[in-house]
Length: 395
Ligand code: APR
Ligand code: PHB
Image (cartoon, rainbow, N blue to C red; front, top):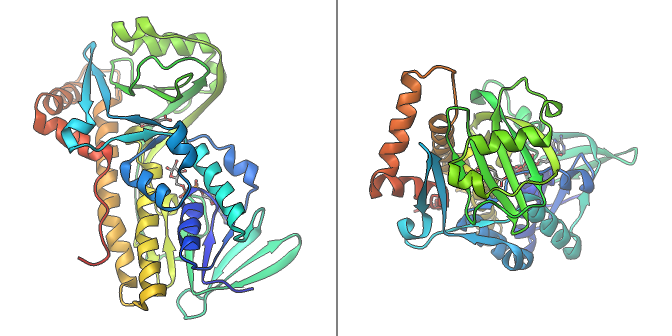
């Protein structure tokens, strides 16, 4: 079997890349180790930057997002008993974000792929990548008991943090950078109207909290918890009480509570692998980097990698330009590190790191007061949150 681009992984990265290539007649096959239902069952974040929204539109998968997504022109930082609004649109010259769940993005991409007739192998096992340092790479995997050899020109490693693509790059070449945070986020979804029209990120002595949403009738709330905490330790009543205790009084008073329909705990980590390419293999999205969810950057960074690889593939297949291949990693990494910085900054400034009313706590408060105390400071937050510009492969 032969294709031009073999894509490993049918998460948002692999599906979006596949859809964009498909649109331009660049042949691609996706190999995914799980089932489609499993991929859709993973609940993740829901804030799309303008660049991500534009890319989804370009891929032709935006109808449901444009109909049901909620455009947000701002969000709030809550600390010291008050909410400070960050006016995204006003501070960035009109940029905003779209609230639309990653599960929905994935569903739209899957539907579009099914319609386009492109091939996807689900539930593939023993997926391996071969000869990416030659002109004739291939991917092998087992599907329904048969070994398949998929010959290709390039391999897009879109297989997430636990995938095999990154591991295919020799240890002598790849370098990883990591920070683990000593806490996790306990998140719930409830069929209740959101407490506020806009997201609220709260920093409190009891710990961080986030009020988000999926729609006007569906809320998504999170609280910071110690890493060893179990979901079973958090019946709904306890969750709501703790969430309210971390919000400004006027916000807590408006909170409408109800039974949770989903509840889970996720650890927080920062991670980057360099370089993001090895000859004809390119790492995309979570395969190359992880951010803590505080800045809502995970999916958006994946989309910006996809944009870069898509531009590269257009140069190669439409203009015969193979000279730009080596630029992929550096182009992606410059933006990746900036998003890592912002996610790390928001995480560091807003979470509780110790029980002590210590130097660090005072620094955190000063940090929030300082940034929200001037238009310059708020602009820094706004332009990062709304999304930094995409870089071109050549100036
Ligand atoms: N072979 C084939 N597929 C694999 C393999 C493998 N060896 N290992 C993992 N996969 C699949 C996973 O099952 C998953 O469906 O690759 C896919 C990777 O998807 P994600 O983990 O969602 O990663 P990505 O597509 O890069 O999505 C961007 O950024 O922060 C996050 O929330 C954000 O999940 C989003 C991600
Ligand atoms: C979410 O809605 O799940 C969400 C929103 C913003 C974040 C993280 C998660 O920063």
